[in-house]
Length: 147
Image (tube, rainbow, N blue to C red; front, top):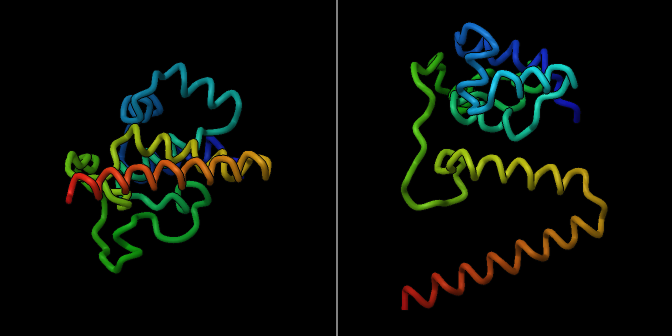
């Protein structure tokens, strides 16, 4: 799925009250020039969309398509509106909960999704096998620490 730059940035500005694209760049931790390059290509990198959505509690679906609920809280039945500040990043133990992920982890999850979505079947198979092997190694190490 192509992620149209102009529509996504318009939704980013609309949902947060940020004044301009330079403010969006600052929040995302990229230079205004980088955003300008994305604008020229007409596409926003998926990892930046994920990062922004996480920071402001926005629905990724809404950022990408404009459809559905704008905020994640609305999906859960909580109709609170905008957050004053971006969500703080957890420094505690990591789980599968996206709210506990650091910005760096979110970026790599975005990259992994891109590989899984656009990779050839052999690449996808190799990635899945590798992830399973790494997970088994981590779980084995955790088990041995707990015993």
